[in-house]
Image (tube, rainbow, N blue to C red; front, top):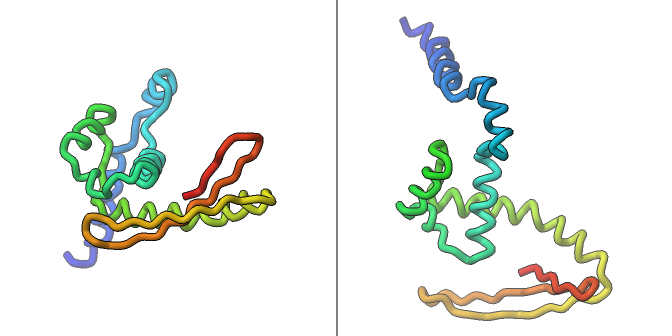
Length: 141
């Protein structure tokens, strides 16, 4: 009957989630081997790697890279390039206030401009900010 569809969907969802929950015995195994897979942290590092090393967003669609992730963890899930782009924009939004607070603590900043044209004829202008606390160069691209 149509009236029990919502309950059936909920029951199906609960059953599918129960299959993904690790039994308590595996908690000690994960701890003993040095940790457990954290999907959010994994993707934060992937997005930071792509942004910092200027990798193309499409790299997450690379077959060999996906297979390498699966070797490390069979449950590793990869997103599409558009999702990676969205995640990087979100990380940037959260990082800006922290960078502003960090830069407020210094009297002198070095600003550098960098302009370039990409292969697809798009022009870019970048601003680099650098500080030198205790003779250690830190920059914010």
